[in-house]
Image (tube, rainbow, N blue to C red):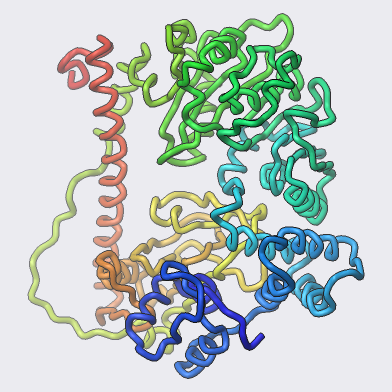
Length: 585
């Protein structure tokens, strides 16, 4: 493998640093290996040369078993056939077939012994997606979990008629899962992932719109992330298909064909959660179908997922003789999956309070774009009052500090580590989807509970209550609550509370990381300076740092609520739902 190459992203992963650190090395060190291939935006470097450069500087850099297995798999042919080779590697992990390259099979055996067969295949699959990120589509794990949660955790059978690599099915806890995909390689990989994770699943390569092999409602819930903007989806040959209960999908509206296919395959009362582009909510060619979905009560909600979509449509197949609902929920842009779940739960408890009347939507356009409909609903006045109340309750008082000419002595994090005051651990560069809560970089920035999920794995890093969780991008907080796994790009500082206050350390990390926001990147956090103060003084400063963090969170939330107030204020005043001065009393 002397001629093996490696990308900047791979260098960062193997070195346990961010990609910005690799860019910084290239700028700072004239002897950093020059690219040997790739492009200006995605250069490739000699693996051997990078290893030598890293070793000369005492930097940890080694190829793990997983990396060696991936490199061997990729070296066995060109990238056009990589998916098929990945599928054969998965079959080896499941069945131990003998028709696999001997070196690869040995590496797969070693990797499976280290982390388990399922995690081994997920590692290779993750590298495959990463290598073809511009050509392959895979539903993000948080969105997959959201669809599964909205469609119902009690479903006995779940179907994904455009399952791709099986990510939506893997997010479900259903005893039985069914998948179809027109791409044989994707269907094969999906089946292998399900088998390795011990699912009772059936996945086949089939074009669901033309011939999926099913008839009638066969699932309790349907999850779907279908292909968008397909022009050749079978319109002419499917004109008289019985699935078009709500209208023949126009030739250019394959998305509305997928919606009706999903409804036809779910049992009465079953739920469909499907991702959609924004256009089908408003295009005039689809307004007849949208109107029929509303009148029948089949369309229950549309959420626009921030910041740029897609939309998430939630539908329920009407039960014979049931009374259609009078409202539908239109919400967005929504900033987090947890917010979508909360809004849906609130709507289910009181559809009249937060929903939009269906009769008000059945106009000439039947435009269901959430951003265009929310402000003009009959509840915009109430929504403005609620947002105003939330804004008024925010702790927006600026913390007060006094000027000082003190010049404290300093130590460093490295010295405190040597003295046993701090124990520092860096999270692994990669985790694998699982059931355990995982604190992510976005969670740390928002100061919220963990939204990620990960498998238990060797080398994982846990944060307990009182630990400081930080990133090299300038984020730091004291963790509270149950012990949790921390995700990539995060580090955990465990302090001796008798000698170092945790919030005091947060403030020092935040102050030291401010230059990162202007483009510089500090590689060695151990050089961070810490003022030498008695622990009693540290605690006083620590409480001030905690107040600053709370103020920062309030300012961020105020900005979000403020945008909502402006939107609802304009809409409410225009529609007559608000009067000047009414919200102020």
